Every structure is written in structure tokens, then in C-alpha cells.
Length: 121
Image (cartoon, rainbow, N blue to C red; front, side):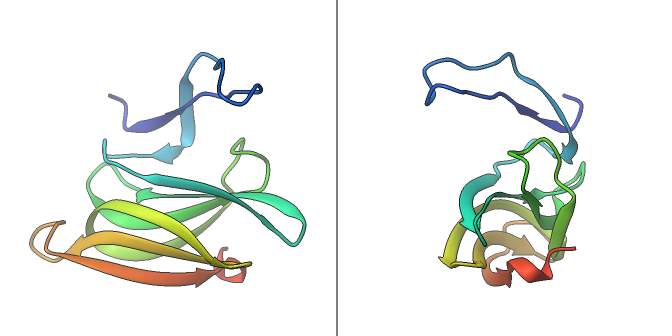
């Protein structure tokens, strides 16, 4: 474990996959994450959520407009202890995130937040 997500690409609808490689910009504490794809303003967009650290802290949503080659935009959802998350598109430019969040343990509670695509920096 090098605290990075791995990525593999399919160009045939999931019948075959490329050899998995480290996704250098997706730091991960070995925890469940979520990814969704959508179109915003005519542009194919991916959103990915996880605790973006080597510990289960800093719940973050990252945004890619080049099919996950780079993830230049991010939104910090919660800096504290956090773990599993799930993403959903609410409207054309609103992403929702349901995630574990806590103070003494990452699983103290469940939180939900919506974020506009324009808030990603």
C-alpha cells in the first residue's frame, strides 16, 4: 500500500481493462470512495470523493474534465475525521455527497452536503 488509488481504463464498455496503475493525484488511506460521471456545460466531467489523506481525514471531492487523467479542481467538504462516502448529481451543476464524519471517530455520524461545480477551485 502506497496510499494512492489505482486506475484502470476500459474503452469497450468494461469488457477489457488496462493494467492498473497508481493514480498519483488521488491520495487515499485505503478507504471506500465514490466516483460519478456527468456532463456540465456540454463537457464530460468526473467527480471523485474520499478522505484525501493518508489518514481518514479531509473528506474531499475532486473534479476532472479529462477523463481522470488529472484532477486539478477540488472542494474540501470536511477537514475532520471521515471515511466512506457516496456521490450523487442533484441538478445539472450540483453534486451531493453523503459521508461518514466525526470528532472522536470517523464513524460518529453521517452528513450530507451539496456543492455547486462553480465552487471547485
